Amino acid sequence: MSVLGFEVDAVNSVQFSNHTGYAHWKGQVLSSQELHELYEGLQINGVNKYDYVLTGEGPQVLVQGSRRVGYTRDKSFLAMVVDIVRELKQQNSQLVYVCDPVMGDKWNGEGSMYVPQDLLPVYRDKVVPVADIITPNQFEAELLSGRKIHSEEEALEVMDVLHCMGPDTVVITSSDLPSAQGSDYLIALGSQRIRKPDGSTVTQRIRMEMRKVDAVFVGTGDLFAAMLLAWTHKHPDNLKVACEKTVSAMQHVLQRTIRCAKGTCPPALPSWEVALSGAQAGAGQKPSPAQLELRMVQSRKDIEDPEIVVQATAL
Image 1 (spheres, helix red, strand yellow):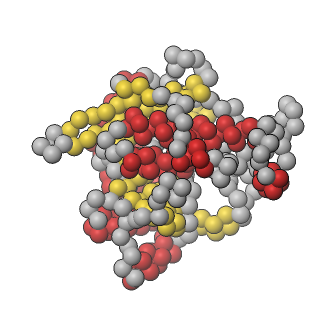
Image 2: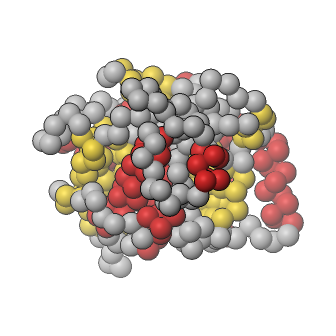
Image 3: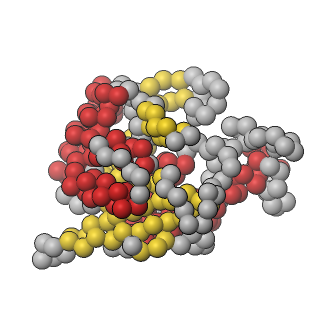
């Protein structure tokens, strides 16, 4: 987000030695009271004025106001986030809250939550209604709407249900819907309601088909939500362009990451960067979590000005 021109205040909801894609991690989790104390400091200094709030699965952040909060496994913490968002919206009625409702995912066709089940009603009844943009995966969209998705038509209906809950922009970041291009492709869907001056609304809907990458990455949800925030800011009434730039930048980052993990990075990569990124995976071996750390710094030019490699289709 900084590369794309945002001044970001980050509030870390966790401080871990490493991300949880590794076998082990150590660290601390921020409590709701500690979050409240941090926000009180902003209030006291009169700097609690932001343009965006972004919450996801990683650290908590407030931005350029824009900010981000995440990896939340406690009801009181989520409730505190909602209180803070509401107060920030009182400070700035134009504030946009972007929420990645991290609750679970599907593996081999079966959905599973990786947060306590009692967080679902908090997300559904308190968090999503104050959000302006949400980025659930298919499983999370099904949880929030209470409806299953078996077809594109049902996915569009689910996004309409989510619109009615509050957000004007809904992007289902991944789904198990079949692609006309084959099983190597993943489908994402987006829907944006634009309010006209006369009070009427127009809905844009898009579909994107992305080639799968044969690796397990950590942090892609954070990356997607952050870039979608930035590109919807730059293209507020054009979800197609915002999603094309977001997904294309992600493809560049992931492809560079997997190339580096397999030892095919450009030779211009400085030796110290190679050393920091860890040894490369041997032939026929799957890259380790360390080798699959997202190559964010190396991809900064692609993040700032992505070549469009994934086109969206208007529905």
